[in-house]
Amino acid sequence: MANAMLQQRPPKKGKIVGWSLSKCIKDMANLDIPIGRVTRIVTDTNVRSPENWPVLIGRYRLSYWKNNPDKAEEICWALIRAGKIIQPRVEGKPIPIVAHGHWSQDN
Image 1 (tube, rainbow, N blue to C red):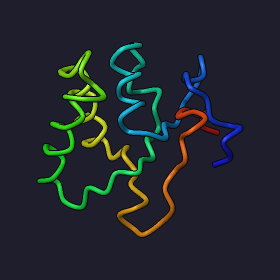
Image 2: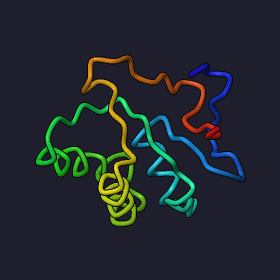
Image 3: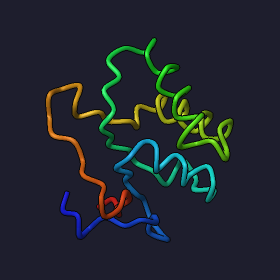
Image 4: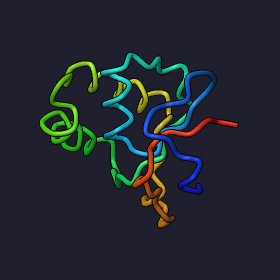
């Protein structure tokens, strides 16, 4: 993913891809971005078993999602259940670089 294609805010129309679990779910909770618009979130998390998700979510609730923790957690669990969270690190693959943005249009 070329950084030039990433945006700080999600594209206004169509399906979108997120490139940071913490930032994208924060946006989804605070900006009312429907889950149906998000085809996937590719993240640098490395959660290897379902039992570890509550630990990560608990940390994110207190930091990234502190303004809307309940809604953000609900969104995160919905994305997990839908299989929309992709974790390249689990497979030893490179992680996304989100210095210039964390959303892109899905083609």
